[in-house]
Image (cartoon, rainbow, N blue to C red; front, side, top):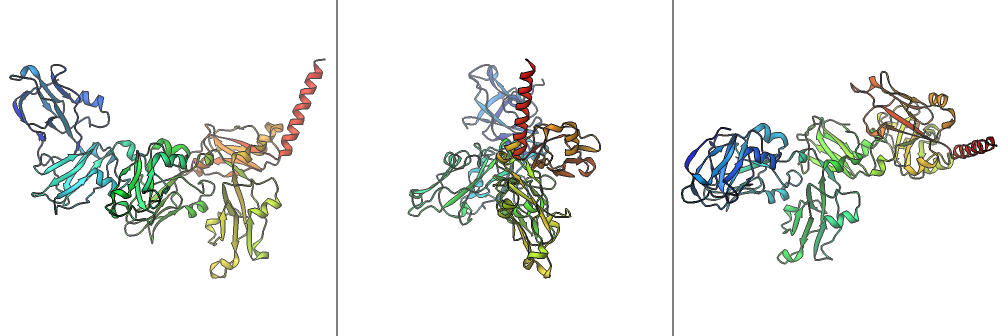
Length: 586
């Protein structure tokens, strides 16, 4: 290791060797050694990279050194190099030990940009100065900045880099933000580099409102209480929190003073702290980490583009465009550009950003977005799909009505009483969203209805058929074993019912009432993003590679739900075989 010796170097708390023109982001301070414990104070880069992985770039372009006490000192340093770090040896000092030092680094743009927030400018230099402290930015720009940044950048609003030391910079730290106190502060902006886990996670929950400030001396939306009240709907370890009034006013605009506002604990506003006023009634939502978001996650959906009025990816339209692939009550939503850049609220053009409603951006300057949802675990545990039903004709009744109540009566035992999803096509197989009809009813709770009188331009409803996805309890009422007779080598994966009935005839009924398909590892087929040529209990399943848009089919397995009479016959058959085996022994 090369050693640079600096004789009698004066070090201030914000001292540095860098030039004001250096570009990059500045890390937090690190102090892992103590001059009383050995030969001196060693803050070498290799050691710090081991102790603080991912919080320091491996190739810093500059280094800052400051005494922990904040008192300037005049000592001899043996190492002071961004590529190596910092070291002060006690024996080289005249009349004493090395001070206790801390270091931080300037990192290159390539490292800074791996998980970088937008620029923030919440204050101007009028009055006391320019205050861009992290605690205030987390309230002003909720969900857009992490609570534990690993680096910070500061420029003037015109874009000129601003680096410490600065006489008026009382705060310049990724964990605290930035603050300049007048004298001669300019107008500054800041942005942060966050841990990669923050950028890998853009999953946002719905809003929660469990308390009322008029009855309890304030408004308390604490995480522990919300986890108990809404089990499974909030992650136990949120990364971010946003608070608004129930009338959708951002929390920072209310003028209230907040007792608690952080993702680890939740939110609290106490009436007693409001100077004679009372807290508003607030609601909160959270961002959650990847492992929680991915437990039951849909494919990405992109049904619209930003031409015209904007980009509309609302849930009600996605449920029609991508039937059975998304739950009706998602617990979280993720939004990115089609190129994969995370998009988080709040945004001036985001009129909808909610798992229960979907996403909508209104032009101005909307990009092309895609969305996906986290669903309750029960949705991923259920991939049981019924056959198609067509009970009505729009030419004779002035409408096409495939309401669930009527289907129950006409097809007893063939449909679950509590469907999770519904899909609608014309009887010729055209998806409902392509017909241009306006639907009066389209949901799994009630079924489907298209009324002729409700169509624009005097048109008629098409003749439709419907099918449903059902919960595990219904699927398991008379269920076969899993079958996997094919693999996805060209032309694809074919699990046709007639082929299975030939190969394993007694194991499956001739007319199944539902089908389940998963990958061989157990992931629901409907959530893989593959397109399927067949997915029908009366026909079986087929995935064709050339229909996957450049991808390939996964390897799937299927099983069927049969009429209960089939399971009764199977039981009697098994009993007969067992009795025959017993008699054969004699």
